[in-house]
Length: 226
Image 1 (spheres, rainbow, N blue to C red):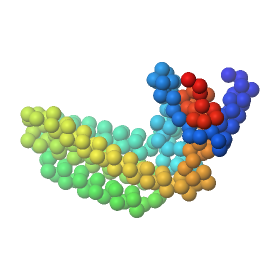
Image 2: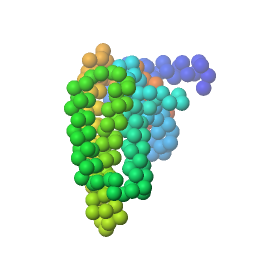
Image 3: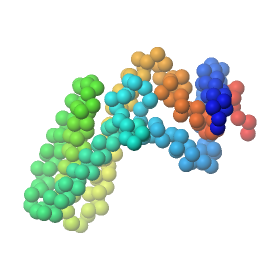
Image 4: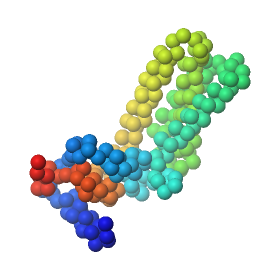
């Protein structure tokens, strides 16, 4: 696409986004089903960063090889994986060094300390945020290992232990997601766009690409004919 065509496409997109008579923007599920890879490619910047592309969220993301990544998700995954592997190697060297009850108690204290501190601390200091992810992910790794070590790592019923760990993981994810939604809502409600995503510059590039590729359409004036 040449510069003139690209400029025209952006202008057409903004006309749609800023048209008060267009109705709601809706996803074309059929188009998404026919071209899922293209849809994911367009959405990938937001899927990787989990935050609008806005200066208000600069302290929630970091750039790795030109891609914006969610700071929390990246470092939680990194520290959790490292903690699990470290505990595994300790278990291989001398399994008596790991006590299930002690691991559980330390992990529980770490998680219980994490949530109140993050709710109280509104600091935008990146290093403190990374440190908090270290506390959360390593604490959860300790709890996971305490469950696996209960009655022996290789004891019968390990599948039930894994199911329990999965449910605990989902529970923690729900708590973190709820916390993130609350924080995002508080920030965006104070913005001049007041959570109107179609008007927010932080979403405009993605929305324009979705409209251009017919994944997104307005329900009224610009609604596609079947």
